[in-house]
Length: 288
Image (cartoon, rainbow, N blue to C red; front, side, top):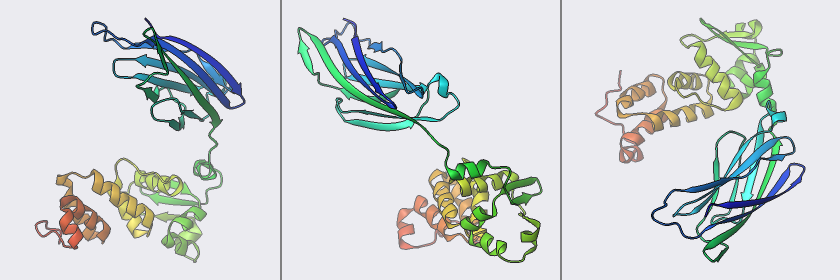
C-alpha cells in the first residue's frame, strides 16, 4: 500500500504545530524494494516561512524530512526556523536559516501501532519562525557614511572605523591616540599586501570570518599588528588544511616573521611526538 498522510495544523503567531498521522504497510516485499514517499501540502507560519513535510518508508527505517523556505511576503528577509519533534527515535531539535534543502529531522525504527500489517505512526512536530535581525556590528560593517579611516595599499583603500581598529589591535590603538601622520591623514599605507588581504582583515575585525585562501598574508598582518585572536585562527586553519608539500614553506614563514605558534602547529601535524617534546624539526631547513 502507498503511504497515507493526514496532517492537522494549529498555528498561533510564530508557532506552528503539525500533528501527523502516517499509515503504511509493515511489510515491504523483496520484489518491491523501492522507497515509498509522501509529501504534505504547504503550511505557512505568520507570513514568514513556508514548510512542507516528506515521509519515506524503506526496509531500513521510516524517515521524516522537512523543507523550510521563505514565505512570499518575506523574500527579502533572513528567516530562521526552529523544529522539534519528540516522537522519533532520537528526540530532535534544530534551527537553521530557511533554504531550499530538505532536512532529516528524525527516523523511526519501531511503529506506534501495527494492525493487520498496517503501521500507524503519530508525530507532533513543533515549528517556530522568526526574522533574523542584523546585529549592530553587521550594520557597522555595511556602513558607508560614517567610516573615518582607511586601510590603503597601492591597489586602493578599504574604509573602516577608528573605534573598530582600536578595539581589535593595540598597535592601531596606540597609533590612533597619538599625533602620528597617519592619524591626521585618516589613513595608513600598508606595503606589501593586496587590497584583497585588507578586505579580509576588515572581514575578520567586524564579522570574525576567515577567507578560504590568502591566509598567509593575513597572518603576517595579524602578527605585525598584534591581533592575537586572528593570528591564532590563521595558524590553526593553515596547519589543519596544509599538505605535506606546504610544511617547509610554512615553517620558513614562521621563522622569517617570528611566529613560533605556526612552527609548533606545523610540527604537530608533521610529528606530534616532536611537538610535544618541544623539539625543532631538524630535517627541514628553515634557517634562511
